[in-house]
Image (tube, rainbow, N blue to C red):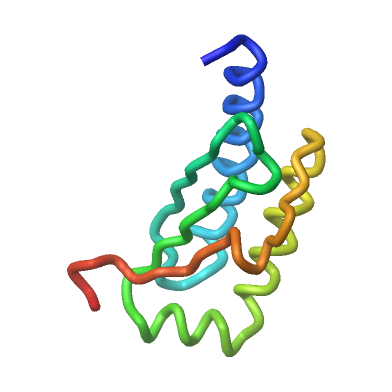
Length: 101
């Protein structure tokens, strides 16, 4: 990992930590998030997995428009560090914890 990659990774981690902490306090059933990225193509390859406790919690968040708000806030937070998701709707994934499917 190059020095530049480390700076980008740190910026992503800080942004996503902020999003995660907000989501945990504001969205019922939201548990955590994780990400993957290829540093050669950050804007195209960064994927973020938002994990929910149950399908019921995820569906409720969708119905209340909270998923859209999560995507927008993720885009805004990352943009502060010049990270612009190429297709946020596809790069932000919303899933249920495996033990609760």
